[in-house]
Image 1 (spheres, helix red, strand yellow):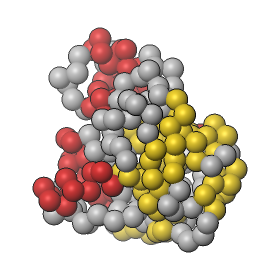
Image 2 (cartoon, one colour):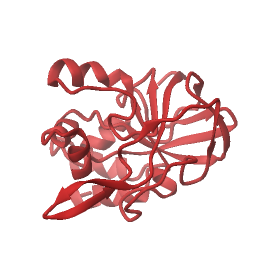
Image 3 (cartoon, helix red, strand yellow):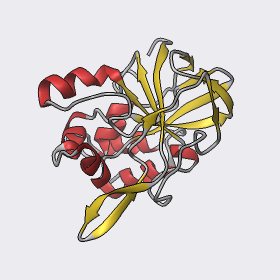
Image 4 (tube, helix red, strand yellow):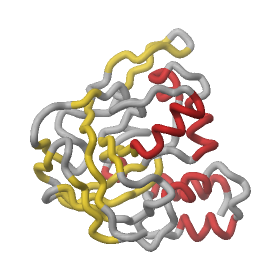
Length: 217
């Protein structure tokens, strides 16, 4: 990938709240993120200011500090599947435009003001995405298409500029694309040897490495 500049369309945060029910029990989630105003936001090693996660075993942590989703995918969701898109529609912290999962790689680094971000892993869909979107097919559509978005880890924290700012490529990772990394966990057409190569990528999160190992490497 040639160095690129992603434009920040929106910053979205939320605190955990009741999203719905499963088996008669409340489902608590912070997926219902809304755009926040302001010219700057504080970026920590595991979160944006004002954001939180309900289940820290499956969400959050240094390798999943910030979830980003590209508007470059919106046309596919809207035109092909009548899925309404907008800032925060996928539960993302950063709504970006300028590149998609096929163009970005595990280990790609970006500067967001003085903040430094690194792509650590794809996002895997879950029940909460289906509840939030009101679409029982939402997870399947994301899985089959690889239009999953990605998680950034924060290498350098601090204040960062708000919507409209550029998130500029600093270094292109040598690893696989985000989409191939995602599909390696779900598409059996990607062979064991290639999954092993993807799992060996140094910048890949330990959680995704374990996911690939469970499939077979």
